[in-house]
Length: 451
Image 1 (spheres, rainbow, N blue to C red):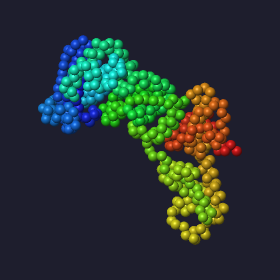
Image 2 (tube, one colour):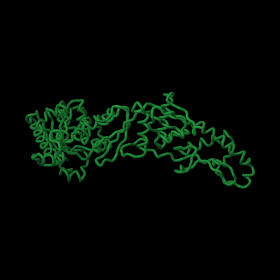
Image 3 (tube, helix red, strand yellow):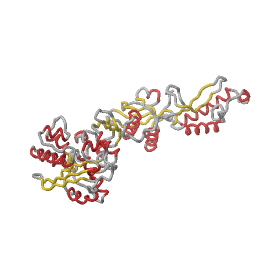
Image 4 (spheres, one colour):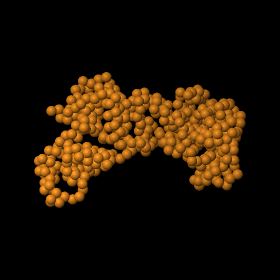
């Protein structure tokens, strides 16, 4: 039995909006057997733009039943039947959400007449309900009302059946088909072409703009997992409606996927990526020589073209490290800007000579560099004849790429000519350090210059 459904609502997502009208037609695949239709009091104000579209205003629903009053009737009509609607996930998300609030758990199979229309009548200019009915010369009356749109969907469904839709319906209703949960603009073929191995995937909107970047050990499985839960909240529903295309970059390992995902999120700043959108590193440790010949250390905002000794996300992190260097190597707090009171002439008289003091600074920097290792991480490539290589230089991620499997990795200066540079961040750095902690045999210590 098929339950052909249409609803009118107060807004675009179920968690904060109500249903103002519902129509359900039960169909046995040959003829209509039952019909239910009712206005519903959404127990919230109906926005003017909704009234302009549907003609349903607050006065019309004032004496109508609340959803919970007719929830048992709706549940009995839908439960264990195939739930059919034009853009089915919209109607289903609303009805499932409001039934659950009334104490009923709907688990019906779903069938979308938009997706079915693309299979039965491919190549039409538009599959919106109005345009589709016009293309197929089917009558549609009382537009944007539940009864009128549901009745048009019945006519559409019967026309599909008369044109060989049975085979498509059987395939679409199989649990393995994916047709019940995919966003309206994605096809099963879009998902099937994705790799089953590691990679980074991109969701695009109707204009091709990337709106989400994700990584996975199994890209095909992970992408499918995005759509198996039809949550009723605004962010989720807007996200699903916006997805029109998925693309992918295959990776050799999960670590490469983690690094690439983090880099791409920072580069593209996709609308629906909410994590990893912290600003790039903002502070760095610098060294310079003042007009009296003293080497001075300072934490400052990160400069794009100024060589740095180390970088930090937080100013506090850098200051703690600099204070530890001052204490351990007996450096001057004023020369390191820990004490920011201005220098006077007598302050310089109390300092040791520049050559002596500068040796202590150099010793401190050498100790810091020993704590900030330079090494490569090597792993299998996508092809047998290549290997994946990631470079950490002085404690920070420098870049990665594929090298011939026979390459001998010894020094970072040579390696940098063969790799693609990437921006460093905490997520990447922590992932690499965690990886080499787990797989120490994949880490190769490097010299900076090969000398």
